[in-house]
Length: 167
Image (tube, rainbow, N blue to C red; front, side):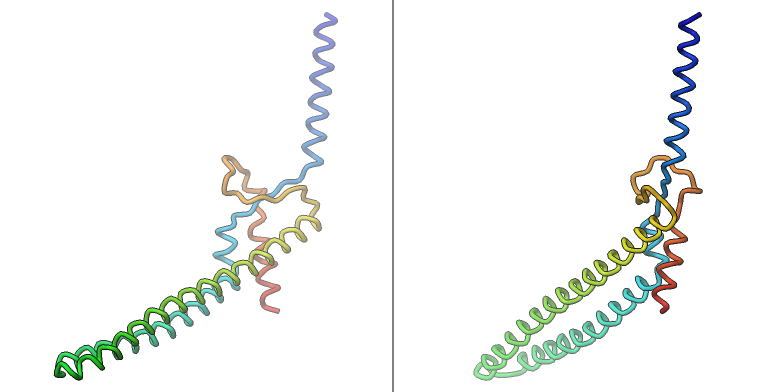
């Protein structure tokens, strides 16, 4: 009898401690992919990078056309003139390769810098949101095996980010 009474008291205490612990902890999660898909600054940045890439691609296409025209001219020349034009062609090919490398590097750096800036903003907003709403932890849902939908704060974070971006 004593054993049963002690067991009941222990179980009651464990339930009370566990319930108290659960009440004190406020946990939320975000879906980072959805957040980045819905954040207007991300889509605007992607459009800007796409426009830059298209401009650079037009420049590259013009360089390729010039190289093709020069190759066609070389085919029609005699041997003495071919050598001079071949040097010019080699220089243009080298310039094209350098332009392509520089453009890719520059666009990649721009993309990475924009992404870093966006992620800093996202982190700041999540921290501010977490503090103002008394969250103990807000995590990315990528590795969550089970989650309750009511703990998802993605929409609220996106809303704050988009409001700040409009200003």
